[in-house]
Image 1 (cartoon, rainbow, N blue to C red):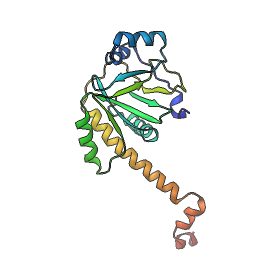
Image 2 (cartoon, rainbow, N blue to C red; image 1 turned 30 degrees about the horizontal axis):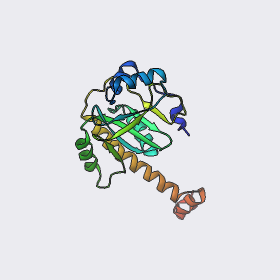
Image 3 (cartoon, rainbow, N blue to C red; image 1 turned 45 degrees about the horizontal axis):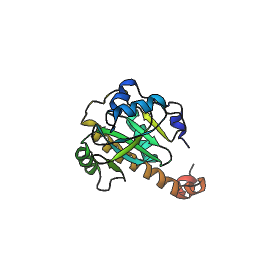
Image 4 (spheres, rainbow, N blue to C red; image 1 turned 30 degrees about the vertical axis):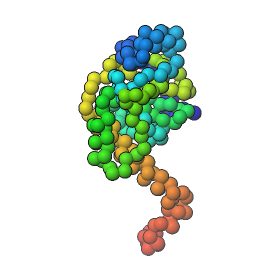
Length: 194
């Protein structure tokens, strides 16, 4: 089931975005022909040529994407695989060292992620997915993304912050699952003087 926060704004690729993404395919002409025939059709594209992808579980990925958008941080294309419950963040190829360096700088225990670079493939949404499709763009490619060394830094930093935020929210839910739990945690002398 699609996350309702993203259903209203189904992203589609522009012609320049299609040209850029299909250029990474083993057969770019066939990839563009497939998309011309069925723009909803997902395609398997090799990573590492024009882009790398950092894949995280969906809840963490949606929070990370939301925080990056709110703060207008540098962010490339972003996709979601609803069935696998994963979100993929596209970085410039060969960004692994930057990403892992800044991730480890933020924390000694980084959140779980998969880094897809050379010798990896990623299934990407078609240029015009519909809401409810397995693969959707949260931020579709609109042109060839400029190489920006701040994107892997921003992603690493916000990924750690989002993981910490979600962990705190989960701890709150565990500690205070009801009003009675919250009231029991409040010092008694504070409530008697009111």
